[in-house]
Length: 84
Image (cartoon, rainbow, N blue to C red; front, side):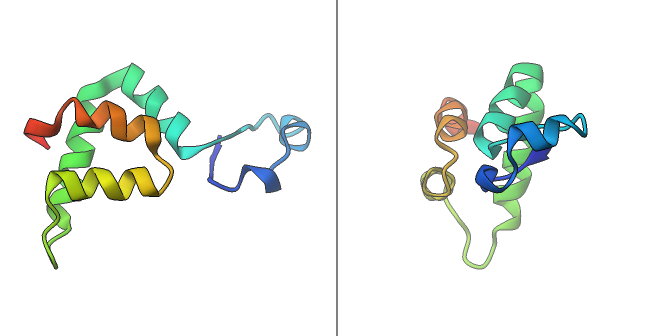
């Protein structure tokens, strides 16, 4: 699996010959949510906690993810806003 925003440069037919596929980061995280939502939320908590200079509040953190193209990820994490 190649996780990339730049899927255009990784054509499915070429990757298939290597037994690999590309996936948009938003789709990748969405699939991780299906496997283990608690682990994804914990990773988001750790990531936000590391953003200290300046500290990032939850709403700003979600806005950053959304603007980076992680639309479904943002929606899923928003339901855990109180613990992020």
